[in-house]
Length: 308
Image 1 (tube, rainbow, N blue to C red):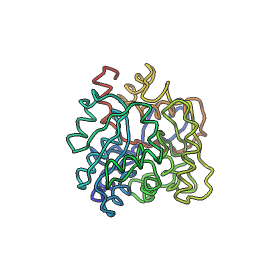
Image 2: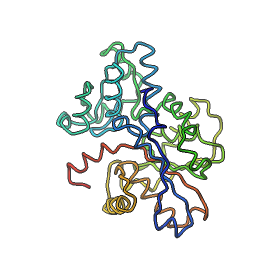
Image 3: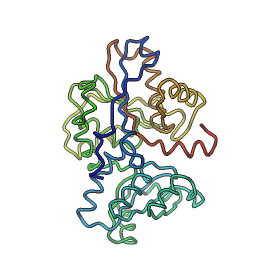
Image 4: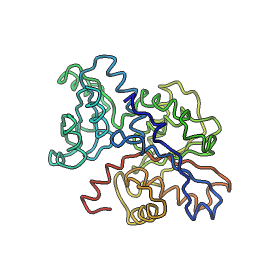
């Protein structure tokens, strides 16, 4: 993981959409998706400290959690393979999912899969459940769903030191999709003080993320930070749910910019941000950086099911 250098690939691209010209907004996309083909986007920042610490402590195995098309499990499997660390994915769903593109890759890279019911998956944050897993699989270390813990937040600490920020050293607003809150907390903890941060949860009823993000910030002693907020209206019906309007927006965006989006995270984020710009929610002259968190491997599952 340490040999992957974002300076060689990550960049800041200006996105020239008609709505931005109409509203006088400068919009850029931080292309984390270009960092690495397997440890895509924000996963590099979230996993690097977790895996380096696991390696340093002679941990035999990392156990983590995700759905059948999880970007997190996909990235963890490849990184574990490269670093010589065994990986176990606790997967919400049926064993039939094992043949999908995401989990086929993970197994090829050596990840063991354990499929569990939704009721068991709800225990993924339970300490007693973690102890039972570590008893069954001795020498293991638990990394939470999405990789979101204090180590993940610290993984973003040098984000603003990368060369790409020479294009726009002081944006007014950072915007990111939210699933488990780790990336948002990382941005808040690492950002310049002059920059506001907006999180767009991709699951319905995402208000609980406010508490989760605050807890992550407290875990890294980020201090009292107030210039961030959540917009709860970008979920398009729920996690991994796609509306016809979202699909149409993604097609139009990709035709205009030649930049692919993933439908679970960045697609929803850009769709909601586009609406907010069109509604005049930002002052003219505002410089916005939206975070492309990668996850493009997940498009395969939607294409396979004819949803994109």
